[in-house]
Length: 290
Image 1 (tube, helix red, strand yellow):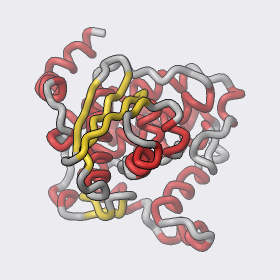
Image 2: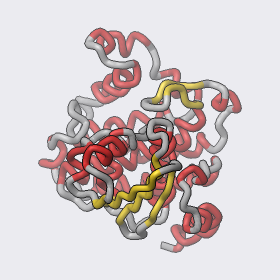
Image 3: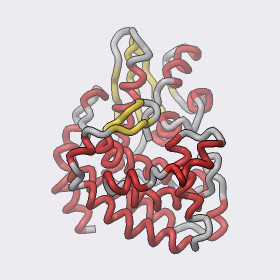
């Protein structure tokens, strides 16, 4: 535990203090390389803790990702150890020979890439996949601290924002992807989705910022107050005009923003003063990259 306390003081204090006093979603800062690495390490620890609790029967359970079981989700994260290490690792997985068959089925390039990497690990023992994740991810995180300057210029297609700097994808979206897949596994297995560790606040804040940016462009004349219930309840605001409020659990917001749950499903557990049709319109555009 001493290491975790030191990490909070040395890498998270400044951003956390800013977030605690910051309500406008647009003011959430993007983490620097060192802080992003600390967030990634903390999320890796939480992810590994969750999968260490799984029973053999859990591995074949279906998840929100329609083609993937729990085991496949873990394999997907193991594949990120290579692609998340920088330019060379990222483009090594873009070999068209690996994705051609998947592209022919209508998959996007990103989906084809992910599925190819999952299928490459189908026959590996689960313990071997976990070992690859454990050791490869740490090396990948360390490499992200020293990303080549070209990663700020190169861009990759990421839904729903379009083209995104490769550096942002590797340092901020990859840990967010692991975080949302931890929720997938928790949902699939009935295990708790733990949010008590401090790094969750930074990941949630980044999702809110990106979802609010996406929504604001599509909701002219609308101001939204978004209260997220969790271990540390926060209220965010975005947009200008007629104000309406929404309150929901963090996990429900995450499922909505990642398009794992429909607006209709999330609205059932949401408190709002907006008419139903307006509420559904707002929820339908609260999506972020993962």
